[in-house]
Each structure stands twice: as structure tokens, then as C-alpha cells.
Amino acid sequence: MLGTLACKPLGSVAPSTQSAGTSCEYIGVRFVPPSGWSVKEESDGEPLSRITLHGSSGGHQVLASLFARETLPSAERTPSSQAHAYFQKFQVATASEPFTDFIETTFEDAARTYPALGYRERLPGPIPAMDVQQETIVLLVFPTDFPAGGYFYPIFWTDSHLASAPAGSLAELQALVQSLSVKSPPIGATAKGCGLP
Image 1 (spheres, rainbow, N blue to C red):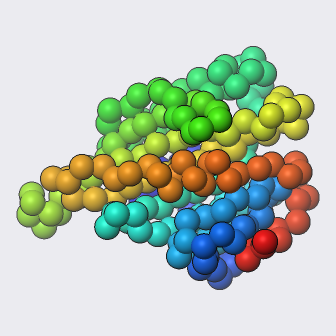
Image 2 (cartoon, helix red, strand yellow):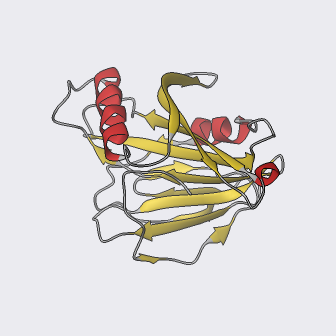
């Protein structure tokens, strides 16, 4: 459902469901997931885990994924250059997928602007009225000391809804991004889990 550069996971831990205001900490990043959403850490055999969040927003199903990526050696060590190179690499890697309407853009919260990539995928239903539209936004979070830490953090956010309905609100994504803080480099970081104050 969620288009990413990674393979599907080979193993995972049991998901936890969040109550309002509780934090999670994985891969050196602390964040507050939307209330009632499930959060799980998944591993596909790589040194760094992927954090998957799943829940509902305004009647739409949303699947989100957060992970860490090393600074790309093929681009200048600035957020804008790294973002453009990452998005180009993603589009090449997914050229055989039925993704459409790619657009490089930005995503803003109250304090920061993030590089973002949007795209769509239409999934046929049993009848045309049941077709599903998946709207994905990929935004990149760069730590305030970037490139010192050597990593940035992609968040994939996929909203699934009937193709005849409009895309949902991004309020939960905005809140998630505003809550996110990098506590330590991801390699070797302790997975403290969820339910943190």
C-alpha cells in the first residue's frame, strides 16, 4: 500500500496502540503518533528499523512510515540538494509502479518548511464506483544540525479513500512532524518504544 524504497519487512514487533499525548522513541527519534493509531517497529534485515503507523483520519485509512537515510554522496550536503537527489532516486526506483502526478513541493508547519514529493495511485475496485485513490506525500525531515549527524528522515504518508472522494486532511501529519525530534544518531539507538511521557 505504501510506496517506499525499501522491501517488505521480514520481522516485526507487536504493534502498540497509542493514547493521546504519549510519545514513542525509535531510531533515535521521538514523536507523538495520532491518538488511537498503531505503531510498530519493523526490520527487513538492515541495521536500521522502519517505524510504521496505521490509523484512520476523517474516515480515510492512513498508513505512514518513518525511517532514517544516510546522506546521499551523489548530492551536495544541503537539505535542498539531498531532497532533490532522494526524490529523483525514488522516481527511478518506482518507474515500473503505477504512480502518477509526481510533484516536488514543500510541506509547512508553524515553524518549518520541509521538502516534499507527492504522487497518486488508483486501484480498481470491483466496479468503477469502488475504485480507491491513494494519495501519498513524502516529506523529508532534516535535523537542525544537518549534515553533522549524517542522516535525514523520510516520512511517507498514504491516504486511501474512494476515488470519488477528496483527499483527507493532513492535520495529523502536521502534528506528527511538529512533535518529531532527533535525540541521537539512529545507528545503535535504543528503541524505547511507546507510552513515554
